[in-house]
Image (cartoon, rainbow over all chains, first blue to last red; front, side, top):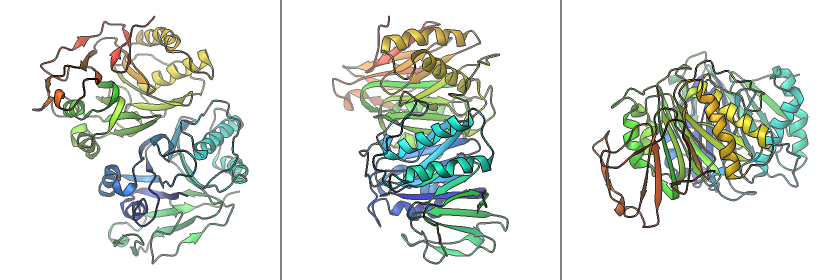
Length: 257
Length: 257
């Protein structure tokens, strides 16, 4: 199984603190050593880093830990290979373009006998069930809405049955973003928290690191963090309900139709 | 105007030497300070780094110079903005998926009144003429060949009139690769050389660096390097003819139909 980390904020925020703890699970505090990846939205652009080395051994992960790239939407993943061999093309997150926007996707879980009909609009490059699911989602969204991106509510309404259908094949915890929002679907295990004013101190579970967010934020900042396993020991992480698809905008979960 | 750097090899080779000289032009020995980018194929996967900071000021460029990522196909670009503002989404190279393969593209030049009809299969995320040209190329190739990647000769035969058509709008020096090969089109200025046994010493033009390739290669290695401006002072760089589209495979230019 793999682990997911997502961040959605109302102002560009660096993920150095959360990534530092998360990356330790890529081979040190946990056994997710079959590659890792992270994608940062920056305006309409995406910085995309993938590596088939364990996150703890990767010079690129080291760079991310030390170079505070600021973003309002980040998706990261550390991999324990279940389907698809250890190779760069099988590292999450995956990136594709739809409606003139980049879409970023990462998955935790394992899908059995999931071989949807792909018409070629989006085709997997690697051999994972995850990339297959991502291509299927984008294909179905384009088939449904054509060349015009739908409203947020229409997109959510289309996405919910689609991810539920995929989840009938196995475990399908996933994060999906096109930069302005972050969708998180829980099939078995996913947590989130929202950090906002008044900010407090947070203590990482996987590394001897503490940060006092009050020192590095303004009162208007709001940051939602979504993870497979809680990253800190002294904060209240809220579990998703199985089958729940949550939409995060500006650092907060939204009420959806 | 921008500058291009491509590398095509028969064995995975690091680009540290060439990139070191090339990156100096991103703000120091030349005025290309509006971003840069580089993409490395590794198997079917791609490592893609873009930054809207000048290459000489970028921590990611620093990483590339020090971390020998080995690849058989590399495309790099430093940008002097002509069309499209300075932003991450306007940094080359661009990446899209077609026929289950990643395609990487970078362009040097400026296209005037280039507004091809894009049907939505590939849509630009940024605002450059270059990304528009890339989307148009992939759209036309898919329209022509459907869901099956054609043979090398058929692809070359389809690509030649397509790039010539785009070049009627202005300057269109470009590099294009799907990992197994590298296409280079010269509209005004492009050079290449092939390094092979017996290897010799090369001296960078832009930085006080010399490398003796005989020390770091085997007799079977072969590397083609394609650039806007020659990178070394003591090697014979071969100019492309205007209008020439060259295909490089395994470090050598191919005879094409």
